[in-house]
Image (cartoon, rainbow, N blue to C red; front, side, top):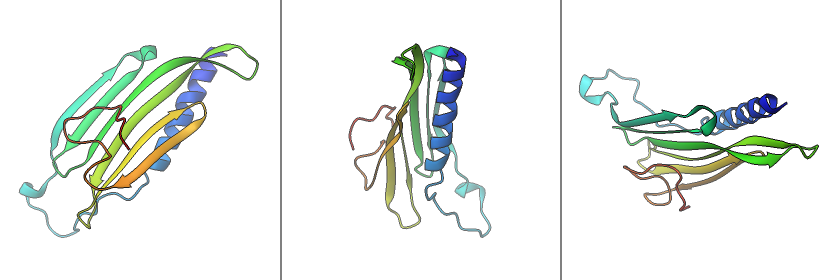
Amino acid sequence: MNKFVIFASVFGVLVAASAVLGAPAPQVDAGPRSSAQDVQTVRYYSENNGLDGYKFTYELSDGQIRSEVGTYKDSKDADGNDVKVLFVQGSYSFVGPDGQTYWVNYTADENGYHPKVGTGPTGGIQAGQDAPINSA
């Protein structure tokens, strides 16, 4: 039962994350590209601690930034049994084709996905930061 609850929690977070990742992404000109215009990884970090959680961060040369931390916390299921649930905190941002910075700070847990969205240079994740981002 415990493995099922963990699987269901992870599956729910992945489904919620895929919905958020469907947000508008930066548009790229379909014309010819030179190597100077290719997007490069500026910073990357990933740590997977199995059932102790995970964290990752990446920054790209086109202004995209994403960072996320996942940890398990103790909770109760509908029958009152002790279970572990995945708690996720993260943030991502990108520069749109209009030059505006778009950002999302989010949490996800047994009660669903909880985003805070905005635009502008403040409020979201900044270069060099890691999740969790507490401002929004």
